[in-house]
Amino acid sequence: MIISTLVLGAYENNCYILRKDENSKDCIIIDTGLDVEPLMDFLQVHRLNPVLLFCTHGHADHIAGINDLREEYPGIKVAIHKNDAKMLVSPSANLSILAGGNIAAGPADIVIESECRMNYAGMEFEVLETPGHTPGGICAYFENDAVIFVGDTLFTGSVGRTDFPGYDQQKCFAQLICNIKEKILTLPEQTKVYSGHGPKTSIRNEIKHNPYL
Image (tube, rainbow, N blue to C red):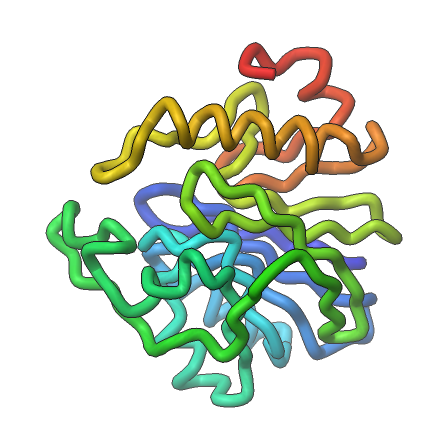
């Protein structure tokens, strides 16, 4: 697998472009950012064809580029968990309205109902449900490549926030930690972890050094 990382927008979101190999033109995108131009430029320069946008969750800074992607690449499929699906269409649900924005896209093409396996651009991966940061937080685990994309569930030395308006902070935090321990830290320790913000890490590193875990 070829993993290209772009850091997008004021919140410095990590956007990942995945290809099976150097010769592959079809690709999977993991999340977008508030500034989508560098992503659009990257796709055009490398003549890539994004077939899937996998949304790890529905916060505005991870979905803001959907409309641009759909306009330029009408064949792209947008996937999100059912519990975050309303965030695509609601500025209040995706929290953009709190920052004075009005980010909204059309409904998802693929609404993920539960943990499953997906296969796009010649790459198969497992969808893991890890709610806490949002009700529909999900991760994409590529077992054959020993990598997992976790969105804002887990960071290097930290974990996702749960103090958003309307959240039961303590309940969501407990849920998040439980899911990290049961769904992510049980993976092979050499597995590389790609987060929604900040540097990549590994399961081994987080088990040893993450103070929240």
